[in-house]
Length: 218
Image (tube, rainbow, N blue to C red; front, top):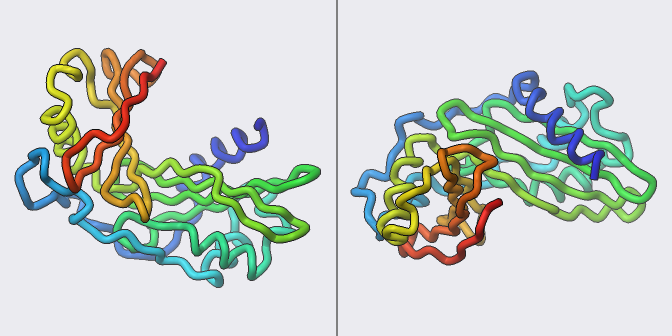
């Protein structure tokens, strides 16, 4: 919906505005093993949940977003529910944390985003909140907060498994999946390496080297 698109675009800007102290991982982190079909990028770190309800509530109340977070979502129960569904790659707090929200007639949207230096990109969690009942539902994740140094190894693992299927495609990006799917990545391949170009998305299980799903991207 339009409200959600506005929230997400605003959070990309806000990531540079709100700091949350926490150690960042080594930007040169690697798997420590050859990149083969049986290599396991998930072993580089253990995903964890570094925020509790109090920390998430403080981030909501301190939001640097225009309009901040609507008061109906700034409750202990909502904050605790959100915190219980937010994971980071290595279990450490992000260097920057941004929370933004908006409410419509029937429900509210809440975006939680974070980034850490040396990672491939930012993590984004999108929730819907029922302001009357306080129910919190995780709608989507777009998680790129894994060490950027893993990109080459993920690409090589996929090419070992896919063979010539990827010969004419360039690796563009990857996103990691939180528990219970830790160790799985969606990899994006495109013609010419452009995000909007035709290509293929692959779900790679790094614990086995298997490609679990394929999706044509248009």
